[in-house]
Length: 147
Length: 143
Image (tube, each protein chain N blue to C red):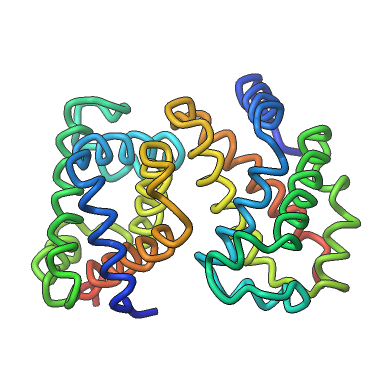
């Protein structure tokens, strides 16, 4: 089981209570699709992803970005049992969506960068460490049921 | 993943805006790295203290960003332009090249906190490619 310090718990709760899911989610997903264009392979049905402007303005990308943040909220609310909380989502990403789990880290890095931009100075090294630890646990849980 | 002319232009354009803050970027990136990735402290055991914002970290951050600034001027041929630095890292410093990726990530995070408007996804992809190219060039003489 993952051990969380009080600082880490408070930091994660604080970040997620402050960020707007429908701003951060779309921004993180769009950034991922631009910075790591091979991730577009999973979004063939999303229409125009031809360039950065198209990606940023794509309503399906925005909607899905928000969905992802809402999914992360489940981990925020169950920090002591993320592995089990995500068991079904892991199966979904493996069996139905066929997403290479290496991609989870790419999205996590983009989310870190977007949250850093939102929080500015307040995104200190310690806050970054807590946030990245949280995302690493999420990424691990999402990859857990792959076979 | 080679740098296109568009990437090179984007990197130079971004650098023209952020370059004057390079000392602060270097300090923050290194300070952050030793906190988020404590295993990186092992490379600095010869310093009296390895803490964020310390004089050693500040000086070293400045040195690292000096290397990045040099790389921007050698963007058309990073391997040749950084070959001396590569030799230094290979034979003297012997930093595991995996750490270049780690520090690059910290540099990107710092730029994002300091320049959120300028660090668009388009600027991000070009800078990420550039820093990856720098890491590759730095590792060139390792073996």
